[in-house]
Image 1 (cartoon, rainbow, N blue to C red):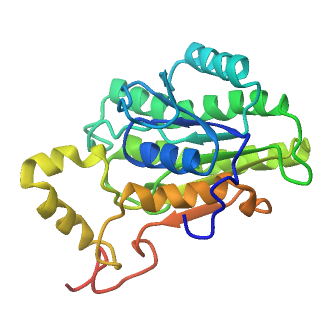
Image 2 (cartoon, one colour):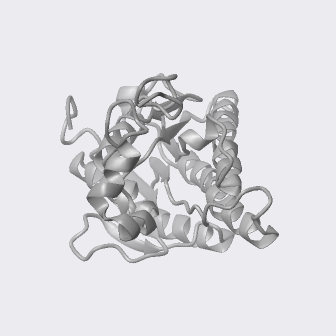
Length: 267
């Protein structure tokens, strides 16, 4: 962790949804390394040697959020950080091919799940004693470049991630008006080597698949989960204490404009 104090999150408690793999697992490891008590909340089991503790959690179920918050408050007595990372693509359906059932499932996980996370994190963080002059809490919502640029598909995924982008700003402004001392920001990754691309890896091989996707990113590669975890760590920490309602794009230049490596380039 460049520039980070290995104990800077000491005494703080964090929840990371989708914490069993990909960006979530990398974030769990980084937050734990920085001294936080971390709960990896996921519907899939975490690795046995993963840091922190695991909580079986369905982000689309409100009762699951209530149970998660109750468990954290009972065991740890506080909540300082929430990383809303869990998400699904649900396939690459267009506006014509996506069924209502597919739409509702993707929105339930990728959009409504983030709303529920924010709602219950605020409830938990309001009970947390202030760490003056630092803010009381940080919420980091993982969105996507799909919230920033148009795409013919996956339609439901793009819509859900767009909702996360504006929800994050709404939450940030609400918490500021209420003077809760809770910050909220969104992160927008481009391509990342996570299980979301497993179908492509299985079809063409991991190395070839990563190279294919890397061609669309001006920097020449897709991200590793650690790349996003480092950004999330910064947003979770007091080093970003003046940052709220902002969106952070980590996409290797994908959305910056037209280049030889870009989506509409000549390469």
